[in-house]
Length: 122
Image 1 (cartoon, helix red, strand yellow):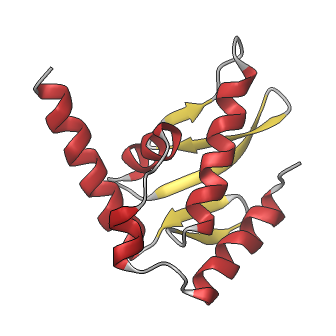
Image 2 (cartoon, helix red, strand yellow; image 1 turned 60 degrees about the vertical axis):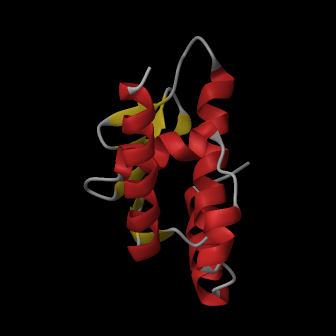
């Protein structure tokens, strides 16, 4: 079970290891859930882990990534958040508050622009 303290350690360890380079980010495929979190946080950068219906959920950019009718939706987004932490894109701020770091903002804004362009071409 993922808890906030585990996510904090994951973020700190990934940043300390500095294992991701620009080439890694450019060649990596991000899940739809990872992209959704990045797009949601692209403007302000703030991401929070909140308790929703007694379960941890990701909240960012005014979006609560949970769906009572589909519990896997919440779980997939929590896993995606952990993956973004492991990729070194998110920094722990305090408590349940996290934020995109410089690399995270750069990537989030690129993903958001791509998503907006592909949406306008549909």
